[in-house]
Length: 116
Length: 117
Image 1 (spheres, rainbow over the protein chains, first blue to last red):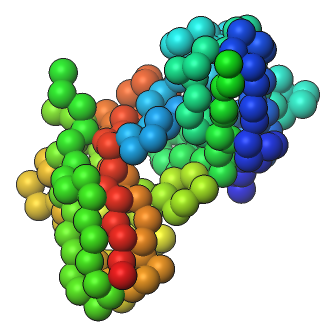
Image 2 (spheres, rainbow over the protein chains, first blue to last red):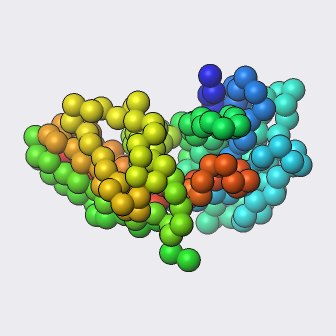
């Protein structure tokens, strides 16, 4: 069965500091992995996705994530935080299968606060 | 290109009342999803449609929840009667046919925030 664990429900960083949001997954077969961002009172917006191509994935707004199979991780990073990055971030996993379908499973989310 | 549209954005009702949420997916997206998002948690799938067929409704509480997608385009999710524990955000998402090489990306609407008093 698939699952996602996001370590740290709240992360606080200073503006300009490195952002690191952790995500570990469990999947019996190679997964597809996603990071979504949710701003207050809005839906989820895709930041980036890993679909078995390059293990280092670059997304929007300067975010990137690296798929590490040996660590079953897909941590999200951004070199320099901006005030506008304050939001809720969700990691999600899906196990693709030919001719079939598996659900997209979300982690519980990490709320990122950015202070001046 | 218009995104996923949901209405209403906010709804406040008293318990035992009925409520309905509407979703219009991105044009051309065959697959439509309804998710429940409780406070402080990630979205959880309630039901998935492929065109007008509900192909995964295993997580839908069928005693009080129902959904339809009659013409394979927009969809309605209904709760009757609502309970206090139904207070949450109800998200709609859509995606192209899953067999496409789109990485299974789902596009989300802004959600409907339901408060049951």
